Length: 426
Image: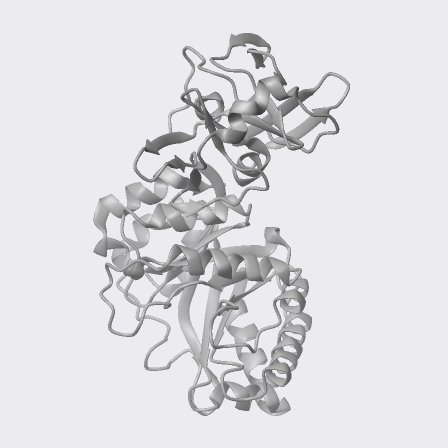
């Protein structure tokens, strides 16, 4: 767990906002001539509307971009040329006030001396890099050869969901670290019919006093929302078959409704894959939207609905993120399987493509508070999983969803520690 510093407060923190006036040329001329640098947050580059610079050995960065990526609230007082940053994390609120041209900052009411003053350049406030690292728990590094600033975001609370496979009981001890869990016990089979007895997905057999119902009830008793995952694939057209056939749609929805009631689930996660690959994407989007609406109308209002959806930079285009997010409680972006088939598991998913998947999802109008970033544990390493979680934090998503329990022990305690260093359940 990230340890909040309570001792000596180092150089202050904050900001980059658009402003009306500009600093005198004498105060900024050296910044214009300084070499350009790149800045990475959790190993993914940050894009700035004003270039980071180095002046007399001090690295300056526009704080607006950095602040927003870290979830910091920023306000600007044009009369006093003062910026104020407020951030609450892990139960602690930090408030920092800086003034352009002043080497004195206020941190939670206390005056703090800065090594260098914030400056204004091209309508942006640039601050010394070190001025926010200690205040907001950001770890920073510098690579002289590549002139790259590296930052690691602090631990943050967010909604965490795990998928629970049939053979995941040996990892049930991980459930308390989650907010919700999706039990992979059902599917729509190759005949287009809902079943709890499929070959790949089925309700597991009881083991003594431990039964499927007791596992679901135990999760609920710990305030871990249990959901039934319903898997379907359009590999042989079976998903299209059920979506386009009114009778099969109704049968599957009635089956889901009965399973939710029988086992005491608090939600349903639809993992409907393969739409919009060969067939008309717009038509399949409409069919899926219709199915989800019908499911919503059939289930009690307190039962939550989620969808695991392929990323928009994949080959599957049959998913209308905006409409689905307006019907469902949340969407899980399955931003993985980018690497070619047969790629070793140690090759992590490309950060750039995961970043693009999140941006594309947000561009549809799907609200960030309804999006969870799906992370395939089998694809990541302890060194890479924090990058993906960092993207969920950067875009202020609802949270992250891990595919899946039953794979967790493949990375043992080292992977678990890497996850917990970045996020904890809200």
